[in-house]
Amino acid sequence: MGDKAEQAIMLEFTLQGQDFIRAGEASSEIKQRLKKLGFKPDVVRRAAIVAYESEMNVIIHARKGTLRVEITPRKILIQALDEGPGIADIEQAMQEGFSTAPDMIRELGFGAGMGLPNIKRFADEFKIQSRVGEGTLLEIIIHADKG
Amino acid sequence: MNTMTGYFNFVRLDREKCKGCVNCIKKCPTEAIRVRQGKAEIIEQKCIDCGECIRACPNKAKYVETDSTALLQEYKYRIALPSPSLYGQFRDPINPVRLLTALRDLGFDDAFEVAVGAEVVAAETKRLFQTGKLQGPVISSACPAVVRLIQVRFPELTSRILPLAPPSEVAAHLARYLKARELGIPEQEIGIFYLTPCSAKVTSIKAPVGGIPSFIDGAFSIQQLYPRLSHLVKQVKGVQHPGGYSRASGLGIGFGISGGEQAAVGLENQLVADGIASVIDVLEELEMGHLDGIDYIEARACSGGCVGGILNVVNGHVARARLDKIIREQNRSSLPLHERFPELDRLDYKVPRIHVEPRPMVYLDSNINGAMAKMTAAEKILKKLPGLDCGACGAPNCKALAEDIVLGKAEETNCIFILRERIMTLGMKVYNLAGIKPLTLSLEDLEKEGEE
Ligand SMILES: Nc1ncnc2c1ncn2[C@@H]1O[C@H](COP(=O)(O)OP(=O)(O)OP(=O)(O)O)[C@@H](O)[C@H]1O
Ligand code: SF4
Ligand SMILES: [Mg+2]
Image 1 (cartoon, each protein chain N blue to C red):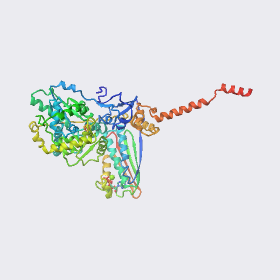
Image 2: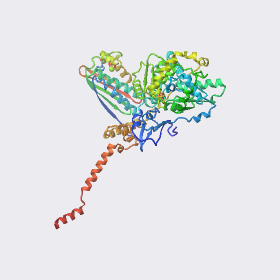
Image 3: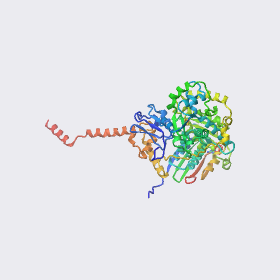
Image 4: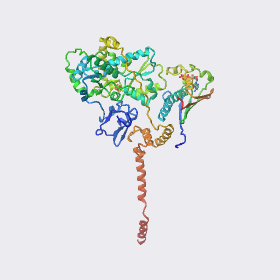
């Protein structure tokens, strides 16, 4: 039997707050990789959307951060860790339509308050931790055999 | 067709003319070309027949395989289907009736405008939206290169493709049906021939992807017929209605330029993308769910729309300017579709439905674990490559070469920089070896020194 060891691929991207020129690059790279690896279209799409919303939240709301992805054949783990203002009321932030994005950000088409709710909706497992004045950590798992 | 793989491609290579340069491999939107033994080879599984390589080739080594006009002899009654872009290929602003007359003089028994099919499709599209049977975002099915691009690179979006046959097929379908009844002859005695501006349409006729056979019997390129046609167009005297079906309005003819379908469909929230790179960008956005407010996406592989197709004769911008004039003129003089075409109501005509299946590319391995091992291996190789993406290895960029190596289709030394490095190392070894004196020699030398 070709019982080969289970493979894992790690990716790490450094994110800079307010860097709207490179915004979306990390999640786009993640999407291309997952497609190339042959994950199911629905898995690729959910992981890509989750990665994108997490990436954008760091860029829009935080000072700087990292987006880490661990890909295994069975699941995709996405972590977004940032240094920034943190979220005081997580329950409120998770509500559809809640946003503190300033006008300038809304002009760019963000700030609908849909990012976090969508992340939760598309994730199979979802964890959020935050400390005001320090930063936020998001941990999402997408199961590759679903969808 | 390649019966081994089941893939169809109609872009061909003239091996004599191909110099093995990097132009086409760099322009291919699906990275489907490699130079091997000095010649550009197409990987069929990845090719979407968009024709970008034909456009990019400075040596005119790529061409499209179209039908020979001898095929016309096999049918009793021959109908030409002029694509909207054809109207823009003539110097004097051409009255469509004059064009249709010239097509008859060329040897067709009649002509049926694809533009009419376009209007029928646009009207049906609008109706489906208005009755709630279609919900956006929907992608136009008119450009077969876009449809194939979606099948291989955006498989999940196939469900978003307009489920209606494209204008050319609808025109063929209508033309055959109406003519057979008008003349009282069997449908199979009628041959329908598309005058195509591109390679993608040829493929869509020979290898349809919508789950129904093509209604078109053959495809001639505009370039192929142009020399005689342009001459005949000048000869047409007095523009009399030839009694055929020249009843397209500007809305239908507008399908030949980007934005034309948008104008004809006329929904609230529409988006137009032309040029293969722009289309890819838009599909990426759509895939991410960023275009949820959009109803309809008009996407065309050629920039400027079909007037930019590679088998046209005239520069796309020039053709567009001419088409704009014709569109305005036709719109002024045209009645609404159903008044021009009472047959549609009488027949209770139904536009043929299509269903496009995804056809995802296997990039590295059909097994995810295997694909991951290969991606990791390719990454390691990529680190050794210079990152110049020069294409001299025959692959479009260093990353593609690294993957080809892992797949056993290329070697590290295909990279000229690695090859140079290896030769240098080898050279150093040879040089060092040459500096070592054999033991015997050095003993003699010692003796000689002692004698002196
Ligand atoms: N990484 C973060 N650091 C600090 N605050 C955050 C972070 N992520 C989210 N928030 C807070 O939670 C709110 C809701 O986030 P969510 O992603 O749902 O909406 P948004 O980013 O404001 O708008 P959208 O995602 O629709 O563009 C934000 O407006 C912000 O106040
Ligand atoms: S845009 Fe028109 S001419 Fe170009 S590939 Fe598509 S259908 Fe053919
Ligand atoms: Mg957000």
